[in-house]
Amino acid sequence: MSFVYRPTAEQPRILFDDHEIVVVDKPAGLLSVPGRGEDRADCLIARLRAGFPTVLLVHRLDLDTSGVMVFALTPHAQRHLGQQFERRQVKKSYLARLWGRLEPKTGTVDLPLIVDWPNRPRQMVDHRNGRPARTDWRVLRASDEETRVRLFPLTGRSHQLRVHMASLGHPILGDPLYASGAAADHPRLMLHAETLRLRHPDSNVTMTFSAPAPF
Image (cartoon, rainbow, N blue to C red):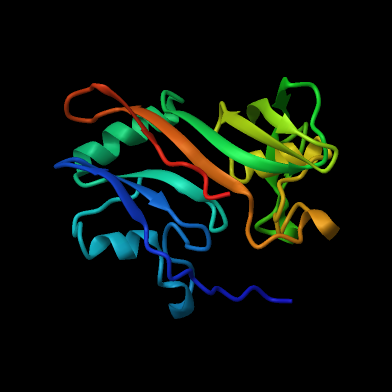
């Protein structure tokens, strides 16, 4: 069955803006940037451009993921923030609901990832050719049915959190790519970018932005 893009009508919520950056709470079901074709033109950056004509991309969230994103409003801010992401100086935390009971209470997944070319956009673990990927986790509460967890990606690979949790046998609920059966049967991907900590590109002051998970 081919994918049909039906962007959410929910609008992004502006968390902060000034002369250099705009920080938003992205809704699930909205592309960060345009996809291929007219049917995938509606996206977060296009919606932001109406109010912020100079908006520039810095990083992305998956279509199905909600939460905090930062955009640049000047080329200087884009370069400055881009370097922070490349050097892993930006600190991120996510909230997720996982299938089953994850144990122990804290841990780390350290598994290299690579695109699964015949099954794009899926990613997969590849110990020989994959790029390093590491995620820390901390359980917030758990039952035999599901676990609410905070995730801390130490790298920024595509689908990293989704593949890492699935590799533990605890896929993120509602994941259309890496969960199956009852684990996939949810109204959305239960993954939310909760906090983002970075240095402001003008003042160099460390700032933390957050948005509560809608689930």
